[in-house]
Amino acid sequence: MTNNNEPLLRLDHIGKEYYGNRVLSDISFEVNSGEIIGLVGENGAGKSTLLNILFGMPVINSTGGYEGGIFIDGKSVHFTSPNQALAAGIGMVHQEFSLVPGFTATENILLNREVLNGSLMSYVFSERVSTLDREAMQRRASTAINTLGVNISPDMIVSEMPVGYKQFIEIAREIDRKNTRLLFLDEPTAVLTETEAEILLTALKKLARSGIAIVFISHRLSEIKELCNRVLVLRDGKLITDAKTEELSIRQIASLMVGRENSRKNDEEPVDTSSEEPVVTEDLNETLNLDPKANKKKKKIKPALKVEHLWVDMPGETVRDATFEVMKGEIFGIGGLAGHGKLGIPNGIMGLYPAGGKVRLFGKRLTLNRPRVALNRKMAFVSEDRRGVGLLLDEPLDWNITFTAMQTQGRFLLGIPYIFQMRNEHAMAKEAKKFIDALSIKCTSSKQKAGELSGGNQQKVCLAKAFVLQPNILLICEPTRGIDIGAKTLVLDTLKQYNKENGTTIIITSSELEELRSVCNRVAIVDEGKIAGVLPASSPAEEFGMLMMGQKHINNEEGERTA
Image (tube, rainbow, N blue to C red; front, side, top):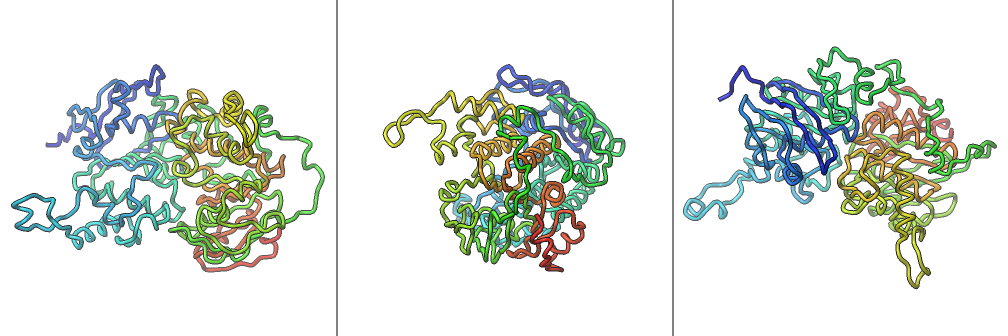
């Protein structure tokens, strides 16, 4: 029975070490029923470790457990498995999806909680001979989906869904659990469009009113301000601040997270750094081989990439007929709502999904459906799926950073080509160390496995791998997904500097329209698998919004030709 005088969740002096490395120190806070808590901090601040402790993840017990105590309704608990946490009413939606691709939305939402048809056979023998009550399962799944305010068919196969839909299904699965009282959400809006994120925030407020407590982790501080009652700031494994959200501005929260003042002066205005000089360290200039004297002479702008009538069969991101040009030396953005094909364009060009149409690279036809050909033509790609496509999770960082260059360019190898070659471990470690320092990748060494890093640091490794290739054209999908505010600035400034000094053509696909507008020269909006329009990044936000809503198709000469 619930003790009304006790908070739903209380943490007392929680601490954790990994092999002598202190990652959490003296964490104490409370969460009450119906309360929404914002948990923020830079990548590596300790958020994931704290969630692993609260959810009983095996990695905690297998590495010596943790210090301190956890109390639910005033009673001490010590979860050694996620099943124990689920039984206690704690739900968790991790940053990386844990869905079964070949199952429907209904089957994923009710996985291991299926509704069965009772029969004499099942009564005599066991539930194993029972059949599924699919109508009842579909009704339950539809109820959970509708609670979130989205229109997703319960019969839709997960592998055919855009990433935004998958996130909603993850959350619907936790909502369907009848005993859920406390819900942890780790970057739930990172893969959502702005419209989808608004829908989710509205749904979470509704859940909180029903009495469910929510701990909301996000790097989007505007969402923290809008949604949360209180904000907890972690920095270097310590709880720096526990305050009412209304008492802190976005700028103050950002400063507390990074331990330094944020240069942004107005919390309400979007950051526009398109005309600013990026801040890049001396080490970063050296690592990227930047020549300060390069590109001083103005040259006639030529198309670097010309795409004509491109179609791509990417499940959930189908491209039907995309035509556009990207000028040499340009930073070109591709935006749009989830499921309309924006991610399909770069994935199709790089040959990861079946594609057709014409693509010309510096005037010469690019053979589609052959990733090796694209890499040989000095193209590099950073996938939106860093764990599934971008990284070798069980391999060390030096191997991840240099592997593609080794395979396609023959670098970091010793011996005689085509006869006998072996890896140059020293060169690999040296190259990895340069990028670890330049991109501030938080790790123990270049020999740490990529799968052990936080999501934001994994993303930096993906960028490092692309930079090592020294590409002429760099395609990046969701470059700042799951990255904290400090790392986001570093990544975007790095891309701008790399483009400015090396003349590299960069194509960025992102769900963050303001991010595209802050760094790109022009932005194309994809609607229903087609390019709805291409506008200068300086165009009013409402014009981009109209294109996303399919209300206006623009064929603007300035938008299409201005670099």
